[in-house]
Image (tube, rainbow over all chains, first blue to last red; front, side, top):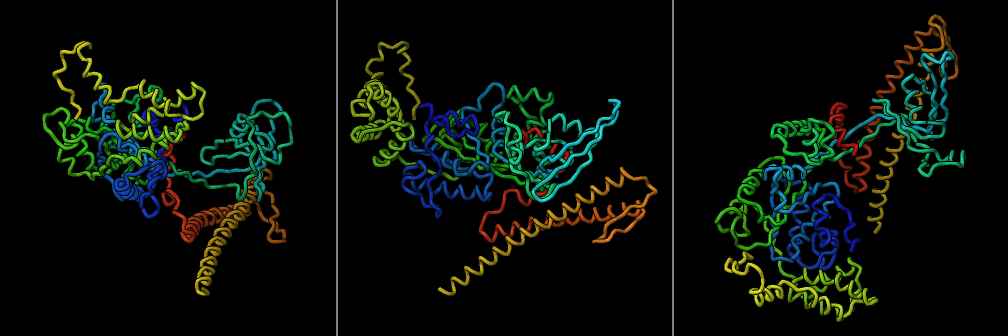
Length: 459
Length: 132
């Protein structure tokens, strides 16, 4: 079970839900955006996957920003799976932020602040850093200390690459930093030209046999090639939120550890926006609209929806993907009924992808994939039984039976889960339908049974 | 058939030529850099080791010529600046050439390749983000 939680984790919200969807590696589309029946952990839902694929391509090209997509469907029809698939196929370079609708309700932050932070986390800014460095293998260091003990030290440093070798004169400062880094002949070092900062990359392979007594952490590297004075370009991607945070921090590094950044003033945001736009115009930055995924979007209330309406208009806006399993229901905090619990004006801006319930064959395949993911071997009959359970109760319940049945099987020292194991866990754990049946039969003996008149809102 | 193979050959030749171009530019930068380093060594030697009035021997091709020190230094300095400029230009050219090679090979353009770098103050401002 622990092994299912290991896969790469990019943000906190992903950890919570990764267990159920850790088998998803992409949308399972071919080059022509046609969905394959079973691929990358995705099964069925062909139409919605194709739709998601089209949106994915547009996101990748950076053509759409400020658009919103709604994935709607019954519970257990793979909404989160599709969102995960999109996230996985975007790759590590496009920012993907996921949160559940109820996460924004916190006492420390207003709802709109939490939403705007999420929005800004989903926008990446690509910037480039260019440094001139001197990179070479140290051939010799020679330091002359004045006889009196005080006064300026002078020295020489001989560096080489595979192509050339040269001697640098050293001043006091350089000698100090060289001795601080404990640089000796045979080390491969870089010197930053602007700051004079020296960093050790490791020891040269040709010197590997100089001493036998060497720490385990000693790294061996090849002697650098080419010119000594190199130009190094590094491209970084940071999110707008990260830039906000460092600029709104007044007390310095302390805030780094508390983890909680509190509210960020809107003036700070405006300044950052202006600066980033300026960089973009000067060709110093590229803006990468990422993806913000809000699961259980019906948990948002009217204020949040109107904020979303407004935020989507902004020119620095990510692609918003929302998922909901509600039909026509009350918008939270109001008495108005609306499809998906989303106000009509917002609904009008959305591209809606519908997911449909899985067929028996698809359920069977999903269960098989989950068995592989959870390292449980299932006999043919047990698989059939589990598929029936999945069809009659719910797919989630059936998936939960996999690992529990696996445990029962291991307890009796079996290698393959048999029908008996499934039967046993089926009797141990109630599914939703049986549990409500049980409630109806015995509700008189439960506490507070007089509240039964207030029917549960399960629509 | 013959037509197709000819086209392939032509394409391959084009890619090869572009790659060769990249390699020669790289080599040129290396050569210029080694020259630049030798100049730098000469300059520091001139600065430290001799009195100002002395004349120094400068090697041109395969002939040594005696020069007043200040003149020699000035010449090397000028050469040095010239080299710096040339290397800079070559770096720029190299970028375009690598881009062209990538394009010919059908590889996607490198991310952020065409961005111009942030200035050092701007980098310092966002530094705490980058070093994590």
